[in-house]
Image (cartoon, rainbow, N blue to C red; front, side, top):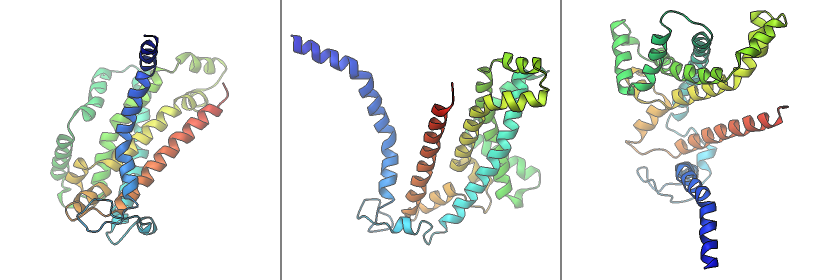
Length: 269
């Protein structure tokens, strides 16, 4: 009886941990498959079995498939869209939290609309906008850029607003009481405290932009981004170099998370 109670107690104490590990394993399994397949030497173009180990995919990550050109396009659009969306979204978040103005409630609703709307609706609406504005023959890099800024903006505003909600306004008031002007208060008090939220919003924006397919496909014209390349290549056989890119992106994201955690632990106080 004692042993049975001990087993029950051990199971009860480790049940949550075991469930968490199973969920983590479930979530990371696709990533592990991508990493494994980056070393795969497939026997055929249409097969996706692990037929042999090779380093050729890493030695020649671009391959003969024009993969790198689409990757560079996605990175360029992602960086530009992230910079503009983060700058505008941060200003919008400060305005909505720190100021009261006519239409503030309506602005909050409109900010959520791109997040709540299906991507096919956003993509087709933007396509109709570009066509009616006379850009039907000019769909490409810049129309993708405008579309990505539009839907990334909402995520930036929501993320930075969440950070601002946890910021005590008394800190800014104290800085002004110590004769700091509004510009000094922002850069020396507000911005450093809000920066983690801004950084998180920027990383989220880049991920959304780099990953997007539906909105991009509707407004890309002849421009090919990395998700579009993968979709097109899947009809003929996905090159293993795609897994190399996925592995690198995962390692970069993991490195950023670990670096951020290390930086926070080293911060005084």
